[in-house]
Length: 105
Image 1 (spheres, rainbow, N blue to C red):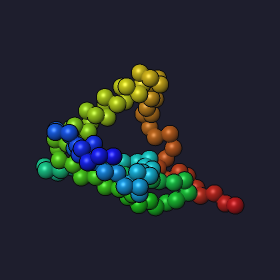
Image 2 (tube, rainbow, N blue to C red):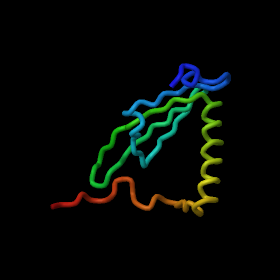
Image 3 (cartoon, rainbow, N blue to C red):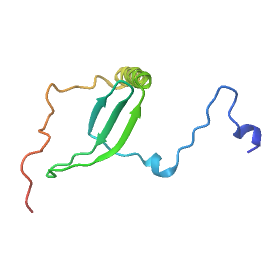
């Protein structure tokens, strides 16, 4: 590929995605806190039978970027639902956060 094709065009950003980050991290719980200057989103993966979980990823955003993320998520959810149908939301979580007693083998 020529060097001209590798360079981003004026006004574009060249963003790299390494393999480890590209695999992603599964999360089924997000905890959001904020201060005057930032929003902190902790992504957690809680599993049945495990009384303790760890934060898998933390994202820190300015209030402006948090609002942009909200808008982008809303736009994408609307497009998803238009293509695939409504995403049902639950008033209460379908299962308690402690997932009940641990199983035995």
